[in-house]
Length: 141
Image (cartoon, rainbow, N blue to C red; front, side):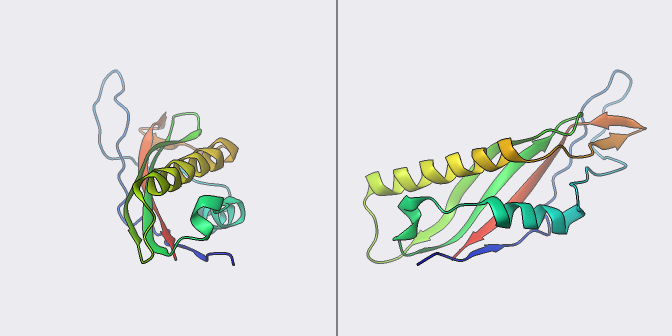
């Protein structure tokens, strides 16, 4: 049976750091990056493309993963960090080797999605495209 993927995508904690430019160091962006179709488009993209790893399908767990990603100054999104510490394994719990495989498989799936992701419209500061960081929570049940 497929495990339901629940996306909570309101950028719970939206970390935006603008890239340093030659004249200014700014940590506030004027215009945030835009995914094709906006937030709903991003939710649809992840929901349509995220495939549960086989190692996760028969495990009783819930929680969330948080993907920290970068949208660079040309609009390419890259997963920077995948935090799986909020996944709770229920009985029967997998052993440590199984847990490591599950975490590795989740990391690989996130990387796969981000390499497939279309180009964003980059964030701008003073009319100049800048790099921006975001946290994206993905809830797993």
